[in-house]
Length: 90
Image (cartoon, rainbow, N blue to C red; front, side):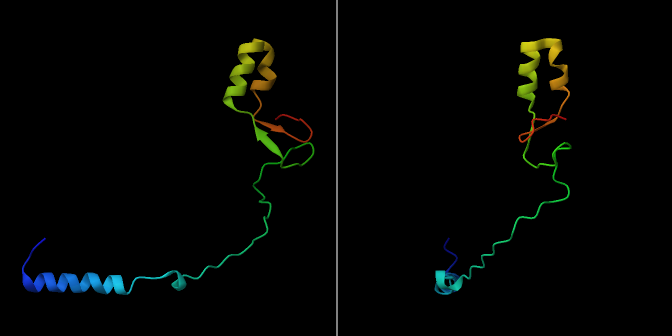
């Protein structure tokens, strides 16, 4: 935009100051920390073997079981999690 001589000069000077004082890669400091993973007390665990290697039984899996086995899949459909270690479902 053209606002006139003095305004253009001030604006250009402002832009040049920003470009001249821009940060370079040397100005950044990286702080990398390796923090050990701590098991949270709210992490779900298998009630049988206390394993945290569990999987949520998804809606697709439940619908597929209902479609294939009908009323006989009620035990599977009513469960939410499945343990990958011992196979227990709850």
